Length: 267
Image (cartoon, rainbow, N blue to C red; front, side):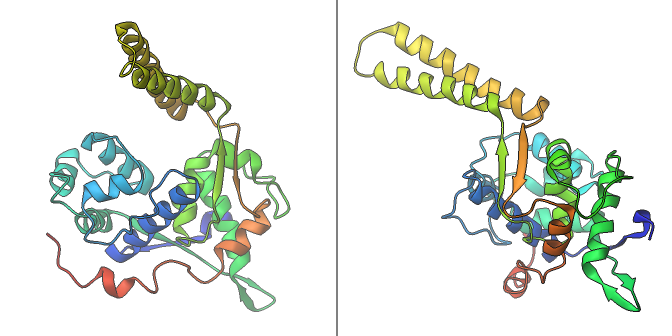
């Protein structure tokens, strides 16, 4: 089977988009980058959504460009602005409805093996197709191949379109960025100095604290944007075979929340 024919692209519903947002939030919580006390619903505001991901990026343009990138769509910024601003009024329902107008849902096409449809085999070829579309050389990829090189270089593909094949199926991920610890050290040291300045009357403590905190923040943004992580791993998923089996399991997100997601009209 040609991996170029491994996926059926179908119209996407707002509920399917929402299930993917749920999956991303779960991944963020598992990685310690999300707030487990926040339960996202279709009526969660944009402010709630950002808080759930411990996200202090309040630039709506960055959010819009990120959504266009992840969903492989081209929604004009002006349209995004109307869907997400003001943050405290607009909801995930507005965002999900908008994405559903433009995005297509990737569905694994089972491979027929000895006359029987085989979903894991179809998932294997679907993953290869998505990686190939993002520039990866998958000619030599077999089910027993390690994921490590591909998850490191094409992490965005795994967290984006590959995870969309079965929202919530991917297990918790561990992303290791050796330089990020240095950035965190600067930020932490800056906070300590700023805190110390409350008890010691020294303007230099405040100045150096602000400088170090700023360097840590900017450094973290540069590292996460321009440098590849040293490794990206998914718990108990080491090979393409493991990933194919995980993606072909029954959906873990969506069944229980579909009814709740569709009760209230858009704001």
